[in-house]
Image 1 (cartoon, rainbow, N blue to C red):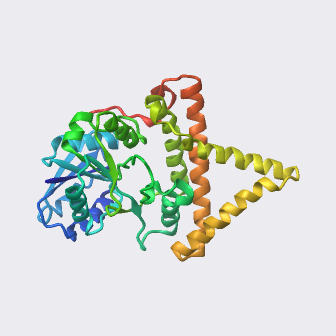
Image 2 (tube, rainbow, N blue to C red; image 1 turned 180 degrees about the vertical axis):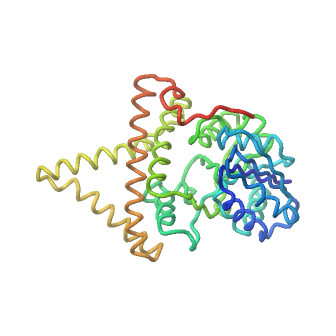
Image 3 (cartoon, one colour; image 1 turned 30 degrees about the vertical axis):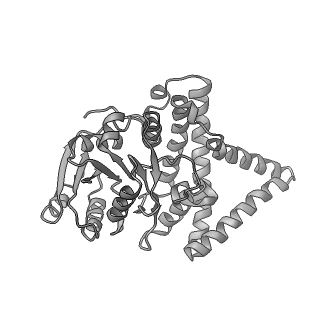
Length: 334
């Protein structure tokens, strides 16, 4: 297989530099290409990309801003490979990544795979806490953290691969963001393609976010899910409602506590204690464990409230997604 690595970037030249530096030391010695797609950035990364052109096989394209999904499509249309590997610009790639992917595809080929993410020791405490919140079995069921105990894995576009054949059949990512990756996975399933989790194909994902940006991000995740459910109702699950149930139950528990009924809030206290202990053991830091509890609440509240707003507008009021939540959709340029 000939790999084409597709990386959309928007105003992140420093991140691209780190990502390319990590690819320089990879243990994969076969030929592959890297396609950088600048998505209308006001702070371009062309100089950083040019500094690697004598060391890596890189193509650089600048286009008008149309979102990460369309930028990935733009890159795949211009790539030369027969298998595309997609990274976000805020990823650092382990040196064995490409070798592990080729081994997996050779042993058990699949037209679309996804990998998990991890945190480097150099990441900030908040980044480590957010990573734990996004990958722990106690929060997301471990789906984003490498669990294989799921029937159909939906690759996430910060770390995934798709064959040229599957891309051409599906036409790639849609215009919604976030939510473009599960939408693509479901459309691939409907076309007869399979997806799979490659546990060894993980990346170090910085996520580049503070608490406010994290809340906005997970809120958009929540808003996108009822839209996806309306598009693909056969793949809707009750588990998608959990963050909303959590949020409503928490505020009801606080209200009952004010009226002297303490028992419901005890469940949340126990949950936070278990989170704190597990994070302390795994991350070896009481401070990061404390931040993890904050991150988990932001994750659930942001997603839960976003989901509830979207459910009311999309499912109950039957509003058009593009009109109800225009901030989730990009105008395609390519």
